[in-house]
Length: 73
Image 1 (cartoon, rainbow, N blue to C red):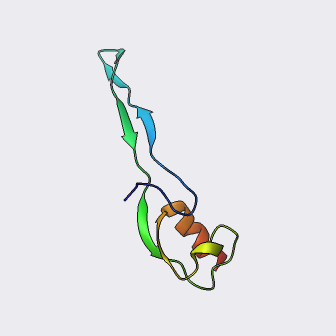
Image 2: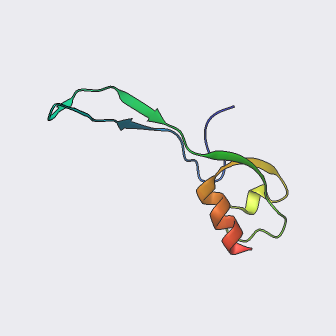
């Protein structure tokens, strides 16, 4: 199962974590950050273009899409 929001298509991103050691920044590795995905049953009464094809289905959605969905209902 891919780590991707089915509604908006949000995927993982690369982030550089900078560690300060004795007044200087150490070269550190990159870290992959994943979106906060949760399973969600999209209600039949969902409004908006992006939720149209997911009505009545169980999807893997990011929390930003879940928040938007709750505001529209």
